[in-house]
Image 1 (cartoon, rainbow, N blue to C red):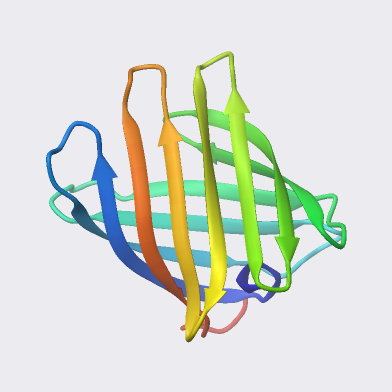
Image 2 (image 1 turned 90 degrees about the vertical axis):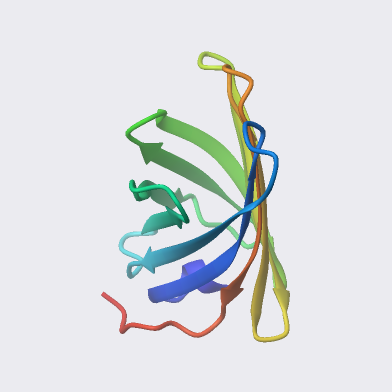
Length: 145
């Protein structure tokens, strides 16, 4: 799975926002850094067509077990959110649920030919719902950091 292999990975797809009537193309970069002391750090950059701002999510994966691990995501809008993740040889996914800020969602990557199918769905207290569908390339585009 890509988060266990350092490098920069690219994804593309469609984002569906509850405030828009149609889907919007997006691109995503995952910068995956080398595991150090059982911790994997990643930065996710999301560019949405027609939006001038790039969204940045910082991920930290810890307590790495054979079929599960902990995940923390931090960004400027939500702060720090923690969740649980599961993995298998062909699947990796995580779920967040933060009742304090009324935010929840999931994100998963499933192995398909030439990469991973990406699916995600998030909802927030303001009633905003975001659904993401895309494809992540299995080949890193840059050397590991």
